[in-house]
Length: 576
Ligand code: ARG
Image: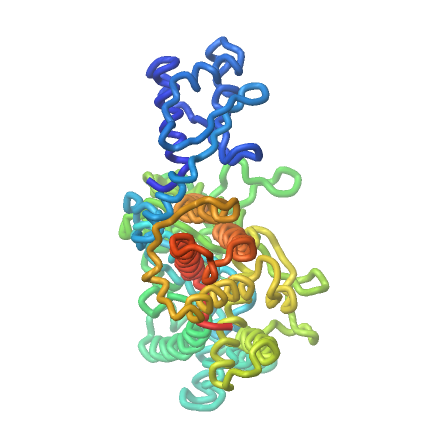
């Protein structure tokens, strides 16, 4: 086992059992990183009252029974009853040695859960905006990480492919012709297509009437209408896939499970909720009222599941997603990576599903995505106020990155520079979305995300490229750098200890669904490597055994950074 915190926790727990009886053997030993040692166990303070002892006495009793001589070089009681634990250098070195031959870099394989993840979810014939970008990037990092932890991840792209706007969109498609340049806009500039349809709808009464009739035809399954609708989806898919491709996002057509897929479930859902007495008719609409969900003046907020015109909306479809994911996908956890403003909607949907008995043991989780703002503190838009075109934004990121690369690596040929700029530009945008707590809003700022200093994608990519260049200069293959690992210098020790943190961090990301923790870890690791590299010559180490060890530490850092970036969905270029 490579995780020092876990190893120490087990040892302290057996000491607890030996000192105070078996009922204490699974108490939380409260192991934390310490300023004065590597770790401290704070359990004596937590248990003192219950044990009717002073915390210091309790600590002394624990230490008396604590057997860590193989792991720790020093155990010391400090302050009111903290137990400070300092690891042995050789123990640390041996654990890093284990990592060198472990593809998983110390990450355990967890008990397999079925985890549908609902993320990205753009709308057909609409531009994806930076909010979709962020749920796409965060959701994809979570999917990759949970998969690596051994879970069965089922990607669910809940695209907006149904509803009243489709009448107008289909009618417009019919008018311009399916093979026209106007229709081709769906593949590149979907908003332009949408706006054109909208303009006709608003300005032409006949068109509006036909559009409304088209909605009815769509809902009643008219073949020609469905064919046109299909065409609309197919063209939109091309646009989505171009964006996913550009972003290295793992979503494919197989992961599409749009709103329309739930159509057949909506009527029965309403019936079942009515029968169970959960849904009632209010002002002609079928509604669920839940305790604790009140709006202004304490008025209950309804979850509308069937509108007064008989149509179903967003809430009913989302109830269907729960039923489907629990019943058909056998979900253990259901992850919804969706904008923070939809929190109320989702809480009401979850509560309704729970009361209807549809949730079973599954746990629905809303991973709230904070807004991405412009420099004016408002939702990011172009200067003219139009929504930002995502592809244009990504192009600009790559363009700005290529200016950086042209400056730092003028000697490279154009093609190589373009490839690096692509990785750096896209990596910078993705990393900016990931490195900030997912529920926090932030200001979109190219200069900051492309900076080579600080917790940025380019900083980590540069750290990787620099390590690769060390091996290149030495004419060495990192895979051959197998140690043995020795830990003597403080900077070696600090780096080695960080390397042991990878597996625990990945586990934490899987539990909390917070990819920014992995970013923080990788940033810290890269900084520890820089400090090590400044203090400890690698290729020019004086002794052969020291050189071999430092090369091994360098190789372990490289694989950890590369694997970590891979879990985040950020490319690690060969050079930079
Ligand atoms: N299509 C919606 C939008 O663009 C997001 C859907 C999120 N997923 C869900 N299951 N509600 O705002």
